[in-house]
Amino acid sequence: MKYIYGPVKSRRLGNSLGISIIPYKVCSFDCVYCQLKKTAKKTKQRKNYAPVGEILEEVKTFFLNKPKGLKIDCVTFSGSGEPTLHSSIGALIRAVKELTRLPVVLITNSSVMVDPKASNDIRDVDLLVPSLDAVTQDVFEKIDLPIKGLRVEDIIEALIKFRRTFKGKMWLEVMLVRGLNDSPEYLRKIKNVVDMIKPDRVQLNAPIRPPSQNWVKPAMPSTLKKAKDIFGANCDIV
Image (cartoon, rainbow, N blue to C red; front, side, top):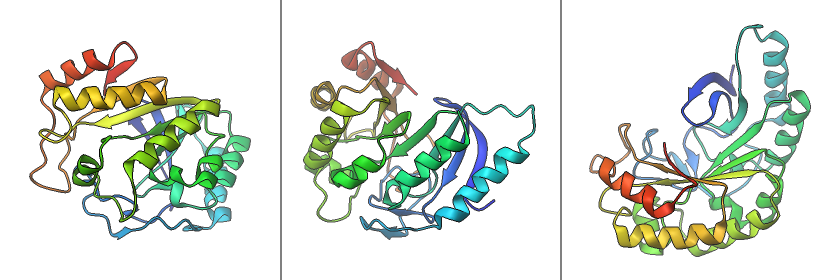
């Protein structure tokens, strides 16, 4: 299949059926830790990168032919590009929810949520997993290498605003890169912002797979434990 992959075993989501609706490495970021390597096309343009009808036909076909013993815990919009760049993601989310009772998950780098229409498009997901690796512009640009013009303060404000009215669950992911965003002082800065966003859970991660940039090192296990203490009871190391 062209758009569906898995189900894959996820540490966080269980057996996740993935839907990839953006071409390979089309993204608004070029994260230094990305396991998929360098971004092929850096953009913030939203458009129909893949035909909605073709995507939904694959989803229908999959569920019609799914083996009885195949366990699936959720359907996840993720893949090899930033899914919120697809301008019809709202229609896709709603259509998938009509095809299955499984929870629908969206994994996003949060950047496109600065567009109010994009934020509105994703309101129907059951679980939103946005990322926030930095809370200051200098660190944001070092870790995520965003497209020109993106400001982390706008992303933070978009997350805060979205959370106020979002009826689903939100698990906020923070990728900790050694020497960039893992000092106790910086972790407390992130914690202050997290307290304003109010996600259901905070998930701390570190780049353990080969990253886009060879110099990238994961935060030390001891640092992750200290970070968990800073973030508190609703924090997991994943």
